[in-house]
Structures are given as C-alpha cells and as structure tokens.
Image: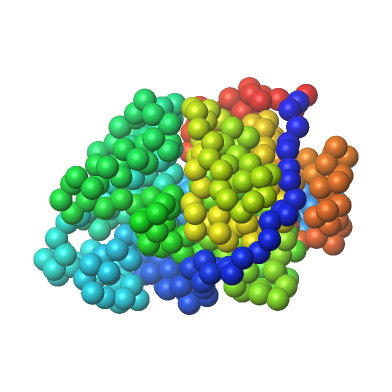
Length: 403
C-alpha cells in the first residue's frame, strides 16, 4: 500500500492578519443567519467510545454533516451565508438584518429583484448554492469538472440550477464560471477559492463554515470537555480548514488544539507548500483524479493559507485507500458506537487517525503530535453517501483494499 506523506510545519508566523476573518463575532453572525432557516438543526457529534478505546485514544468525536439541511453535506453553510452577505451588502444592510423569512418574502423580491449565482463544484458546494438560490427565488449556474458523479449532477439539477459537466478540471471550471459571471447582468461568483481581487465572498463562505465549528465546540462542552486536544480537518481549497482552525484559534487563543490538515495526494497543494516552507502557496495541476472528489482542488484559498500556515501542526498527503478504509470503519463501527455513513471526502479523517494509531510506520508523526490515551480527538465527516455507486463499491465490493 502506498504510504501517507507528511511534513511538520516549519513556517514562521507572520502578523496573522487574516485570523480576524474568523472572529467570534463574525461566526456568531453566520450562526444567527443559519438559525433563521426552518431547515436548520444542529448536526450530531458522534461519540465513538469503542473506537477510541480500540485505537488507544482518550476520546474520538465525529461531527456528522450528512444531516445538514437535508442536503447530505456541510457545504450549504458557506454558500448560503455568502449569498446572504452579498445581498445584505447590495441593499446597504448588515447581514444581521437579513433572515430567511425576509429573503423569501415578496417585499424582498420587489426590493432586490433577482441575481444569478455562478459556481464550480464537484457536487456538494454546487448543490448547496443551487438549493439556497432556489429557496430564495434566485437563479444559479453550476459548472462541474470532468469525472463528476452523475448522482451529484442530478441532485444539483433537481434544485433548478443550470448545470453542466465540463471537460475541464476543477480549477479550470472555477475560471470558466468566474468569466461567465462577469459577463452576466447581476451575475455573482460564489466560490471558496480566493484570488487577488476576489476575497469577500470566499471569506464569507469560511465564516459560514464557522457555524459547524461553533456547534462542535459547544457540543464538546456539553460532553464535559473544554475543548478537543486534536482537530483533524480535510482540505480541498482549504476554506473549511481555514474556517475550523480560525474559529478554534479565536476561541482558545492561548491554548488552541493541535490541528492536522489532510489532503488527497493528487491535489496536495498545502502539503507541497508546507514542504517548501517559504510561506508561499504552491499549486497542483492536471486531472486530479481521486476517490476524494470534494478534495480534488489544486489551488489554495489565499485567505485560508494565511491562517493555516500559522496554526497547523502537520500537513498530510493521503492516498485513496485511507479514505476507503475510513468509510468502512465509520460505516461498520465498533460494537456500541453509533454508525456514521460517510462519503469519500468525509471519511479521510477516520482512515488517517486509524493509520496513525495502529501503524508504527507513522510513530514519528504520532509522537510529534502527542497522540495518546489522553487525547480528545475531533474530526469532521463532511458528507454522507453522496455518490451511492461509489459508496457500494467501497463498502460492498472492497474497492481500494488495505491489504
């Protein structure tokens, strides 16, 4: 089996000016916005006591995002809040004045009219944008990269979006959608990839993801634990990771958890950036074919990169078999533990944590991170079974075996 690669963070801290994007005040605004939706409920924090004992950890907790707004993934948190922030800005309001009830009212339609929200996606983000646009009476256009799942395509189409699968990779689809938005009256690009001149909306998307981190932090306290000691978080463009890390650092500025960033090895731009250790982000190009479709992004969100290079302990480049093993371990749990149905991008944390604790090949990393029987570990299952055929191939047919 192909091993996981890793690098400890040796980059020097800078002024950390981007950390304020994820301030507690900004996340509270996102949380209040999401709470105004009738579909909102707090997603479960699955407590895997049996798995923790089996692996030699003090505790293992999985934030289960398949229950988010009935959309089987966390992504809607970012897209919906960015749309709310954009609409508020256009109307000269603060987002705290914007609620679901107002955004679905006849008065809002008369005052604001209609915009067209463009995005590129492997599936989950596009579905979230299309769903929010549909609910708010707006238009959406979604471009998907080659190799995208037909099931994910159909889920986006059901929300009334104009959606296509292009013969392009993810980052090329982003550029295509951005150009289309520029040339469309009232066209708006809603993407979590930041670049020069395009930073407000990616920052708002990150703040939207802060809702998930804020919920998890509160759920830990409900369990009688002040905070996790370790947070494992996956990265595509890094907006989820930047949101999670930024929120926990703002919440515990003097003693934050240790953060471990995980990427698909074919799209490991953060790992390569950390390896270079000069503080500059690196990009990965090509087709980026991986089981972890949600992580198949070769260019970093520059806002997230600024946060992550200052606060992540280790950057991991992960082979596909680890995600498949994570899916099986969560889907067929230790006796007494809850079942977590997790998709390919959602389950990588489980595969990585198991490899670290079971395999002495990674003892150096395990020791460096101080993972032991006292550790209280948090991971995010960012999606449920969003590609049923792939899910069956992994769980039923043993695709991507570990032996």
